[in-house]
Length: 150
Length: 150
DNA sequence: TTAATACCTACTAATATACTAGGAATTGTA
DNA sequence: TACAATTCCTAGTATATTAGTAGGTATTAA
Image (cartoon, rainbow over all chains, first blue to last red; front, side):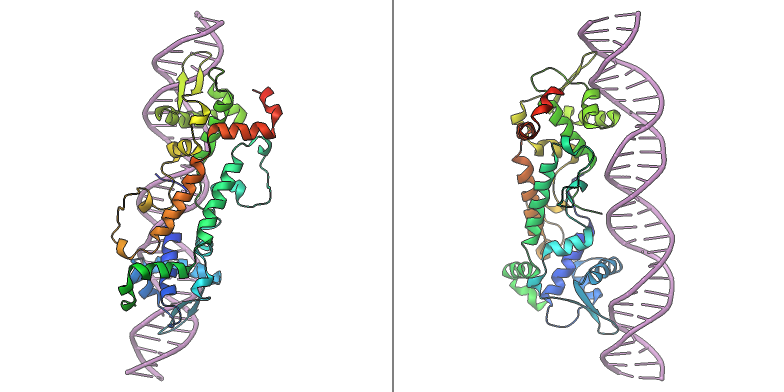
């Protein structure tokens, strides 16, 4: 197997958020449409988007013609925010989740902690430097035809 | 839970390799000593070090007074090599494990792949830029007394 | 000869993953 | 007002992974 991997929660959730970003300013998008466009199980995505709603990343409109919209402009939501809401903190080992030096029992003799810290910082730097708007812009650059599908 | 995390295989394995690096040039170190110094289950570590032996990172000497040594100088073994041997490739999602563009069925419409690629490159860059020698040097700088424990 | 070591295969409890099942509540539209 | 489209909610489940443990055999220095 491979490691430092994301579960499908983060993957699917980010793809769903991308669809909402593409649709931003054009009213709510139903789960059915989002799931259909990204080929994700609708019922499973429902659970993921519930998490994002509770975290304040998306807003919902109930009833017929309802759906979901981003709660902020795409430029104000980072990939890191989305992934961390769905997956929890991004860190290779537990002892570097918090930046404050929460020492484990072997802390004085741990030669590896500094490495885990660097990995963590590097991962988060990548995902925090990309917004949903960046994703949409990049995608439109490569697929100018995609707008007509929406 | 937290994500992009390493299992204990990578963590324990790297700590064991650190001990072998500290001891480099002074003959073999037994599993018992390594496990004892790093507070790891000896029997479990045995399985991890077997993987590293098969991968050519360590050499073993059987029988009484036997043990393990690094098969190359600490400066020639990177943290990335150790972790990848024990955990497999370091990549957040499967579709970026290989650099060649192995496209999934939705490849033309995947707005996230470039992000996973950046995460992967960033993680590997960190671990590949640190050698076991770097770890030992850093540690000795902070704990000059540790040499006497060996 | 013996004690210390490496080497090997199999088993297991606990946990997480990626869903599915089945419905209740809400709301725009005919 | 009825109804269809939607969100919202709780619970179950098959599979895989993790982090070991159990119980040995083979090798070698003293």
